[in-house]
Length: 168
Image (cartoon, rainbow, N blue to C red; front, side):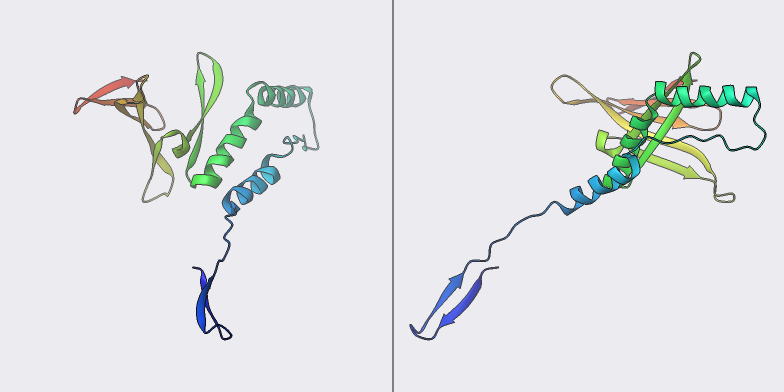
């Protein structure tokens, strides 16, 4: 609030305006953390004392696959979402023999539900809720994806009815 002061010479009160400036501290902190985490590419090193030709070839394949699949971008998007919202997941998958990745984030409208086993503390199931939109931006349908160690389920809710979807 502005300050109210008393002028003894004039015998009256007056208002001193206090200028306010907004600083985007959260944005600055996030940018700084991202620079420290993702500013340089990861450096891979082969450290075993006994290095065979098979091990060197596999190591080269891993490094090349990392570059080909843009994993640096995946990590950046994952860290960015985690720093901004505190909620993020990096999903890696194999489809038709090829590896891929997707970052799930509440920045993109995803709601994430990890389920941990109460005895072991291990992740037993993972669910993601999201919506599809039409060209006007109106929500058309809600979906929930559920993963476990073996299966993938997709549930769709349209017009108030829940339908079991694809089971892969």
